[in-house]
Amino acid sequence: MNKTQFKISRTYFIDNHFEKTPLIFKKGYVGQDFTWQELDSAIYASQSSPLGIKVFNNGPIEETQYCNKCIELGVAKKQLDRDQIYRELDAGATIIFDRIESLSLRIREICNEISQFIREDVIANGYLSFGDKGSFGDHWDTHDVFAVQLLGRKRWLLYYPTFPLPVPGQTSKNFKHCRPSTPQLDLILEPGDIL
Image (cartoon, rainbow, N blue to C red; front, side, top):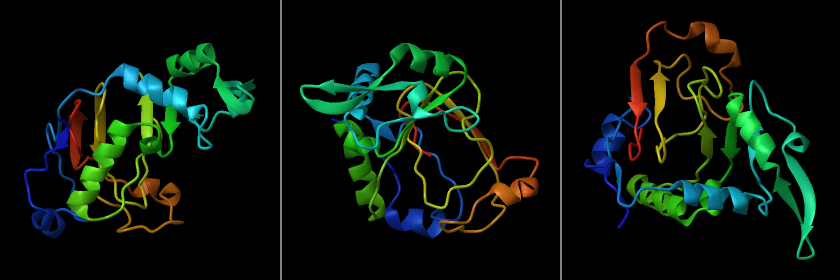
């Protein structure tokens, strides 16, 4: 059985960490490992999803560069150009899955468990990349984030906030020069870790 294990109470989390300081749960997600086959299934399902996938490499890549339109069983859909996707990944691109919980039951279950813990609605965006190139550079998010590492490893550098509790519409673009020189946390997430 798959289960998230936070090992602290919701009250402790809210009082000591929520909107205050990052926290890592080593092996916070336990159970059967997420597999490349499950990821492949999500990629296949994305072709019929209105959200699809996006490819990002120093900015968004036009969908026509990696996706073709086709008809399957009388239904219009997108078909990913597998060779072009591989070329983009080799060149340092990141594949972005908006609302990946709609493409993967396992990821939906993880969202539900996090939602039960924090008592808030939870959605998931997925990111796939290879190599050590950062996907988006220094930035902040205007929403709360639980990063769940499902496959591979990822290095995270977290800095003290340059702008407290930003809301949608406020961006980090004009605050990059304010970033401290030393990170608050420098860590590697392994499969099963939750940040």
